Length: 287
Length: 250
Image (cartoon, rainbow over all chains, first blue to last red; front, side):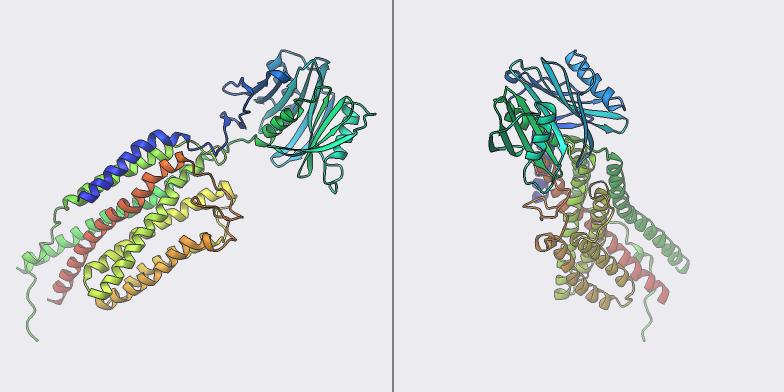
């Protein structure tokens, strides 16, 4: 008896403690911005400007913002334009660069907007049912110009992203650029290749069949931190699946089986009483 | 042959004896604990952001296996002691263990299958852990069918004791197979998951805090309480069967 009561008290105490402490049972070791619609990693060291539905992080020394939002529009171009306008109060116009890239979670549209020399926006967007998820990197650093993009690999036999860097810098920065220094850089997001020219710096990282690129004109000091942060946001983005129906089904199954077990005890008890009553009637008749 | 004694009214006094106080306390604690553990798993614990709400089934899925482990373990103990001492009550404990353990292992199997659908994209796969769990369920279901098929009471008790002892091998295989066979996609919570494991999640302190009360409840209180009720019922069923036999023979 004493053991039972002690064990029961222990369980009840654990239940009470558990009710307080179980709240953090979902962190998975990474600090995440969580909204009903999506999750992205929180960027440490960045100013958190997030609201309930939008994840937005700002790095003042680079004049850079990384923003993730789900826009209730089906048209990707319209959704990206509307989100940038709403966030920064600037009409970015049409994209100067547009491409598509297949990542593990679907086909993303890559857009680059450069409305004027003061600001640029690099956007990755894709459909989520009837809405559009827009992950944008916006920089307004007067000292330079930074662009981020993902491209399908042009030659998958190449071990590095040099081919994609050459093609992208030629198209977006300067067709005549010639890189004279090459290095590799290990960042939390992965192993990057860094190419330097007189006015330009380019970083590239191979990821499956694609390469992620970060291109900078002049302002290169912050480029590794920015490229790493944008990449971690892109690769860390995911939508929590809505599978509460399966949970309800699982609970129903458990309750039905437990109910059947407990119910069978009652049912057999009732049957036993009926049989006993019948025997008593028979014994009474005999007597 | 001498004349058999007539069935007297006094023989029929197999009225329900009042439940022992300890059983009443156990029943209340188990019911409250079950409600509390459901609250912890379904409401207090946070939603797993990778798997979504379905991950909460973990707080029933895993403890139910350990509840089955306890119940089948008591079947093993009951069988061993019955064979050594030939006392009926140990056979009844073994039978109660099979019924309760089978219900718990069915809960484990079904909740696992339902969890697998959104996470593994399939209701079922012939993975070593899933296969061994299914074999375990079938082995104990066969125990009940075989038991019903043997009329001679002493033979039935002895045979089922041996069966219950041997059947426990399937429980041990199910428990340890993911530590032995690396080709499994079933993750483990304590220790490193196999290389191919899919759908695992980190056992953070919050998960552990929500799990421990559930685990203790399913491991100790639920099997013991349900088995005790079942044993009491079996006592009365056997007493009634003796009376029926006696009444028919008159």
